[in-house]
Length: 113
Length: 112
Image (cartoon, rainbow over all chains, first blue to last red; front, side, top):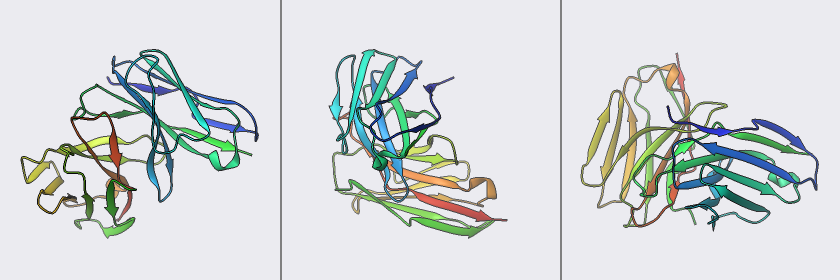
C-alpha cells in the first residue's frame, strides 16, 4: 500500500526555535512536495523537489528551507520559527510525469508559541 | 494569483441531496483535473480525476463534469451521506510541469 509518512504529527515549538519536519515515502517517487494548509487558503506549495539534492521554490518559500539527501526523504526546515508559521504541514509525493496521483501524508500540526 | 478557483467555501446539504462544487481555471496547458477528499485529522486522498478529452466521469456516487470551452469543472455527489462530510479540493496539473495547483477547498456537511 502507498505510504507517505510524516514522523511528527503534533509539535509545539517556541518562537525562534529551529524546527525540522521529516517526510518519508516508500513508492520510489521522483517528486516530493511540502504544502501548508490554512483555513480558507487551501493548500499552498512551499517547496518541491524533483530529484535528490534538487529543489524548487513554491508559492510561499519565505522562512522555510528544505533538504533532500535521499530519494525517499524530504525535510522541511523552519530556521527560526515564528507564530505566523503555526499551521498544518502536508508532505506529498508523485511520479515525475504529472497526471499520476499525488499522495499525501497525514499532516504535521505545528503550533509556535 | 490563484490558478484554480473553487466555490463555494462551505456547503450544507440534507442526506440524499446532491452537493455540487465548482472549480475554474485559466491555464489552457492544464490537462489533468483531480478531486481530493480530506477528513479531519487526515491528509487529502484522491477521489476521482478527469482529463479534458471527456466531458464527464463517474465513479460510484461521485461524478466530475468538465466544460473545456468554459474552463470549468465540477464535482457532484449523488445521494449524499453523512459519511461524505469532509473537505473537498479540486486541483489541476499539466504534463509539461511537475506541479499541482489546488483550489481553496470546500467544507461539506451532510445532515442526517
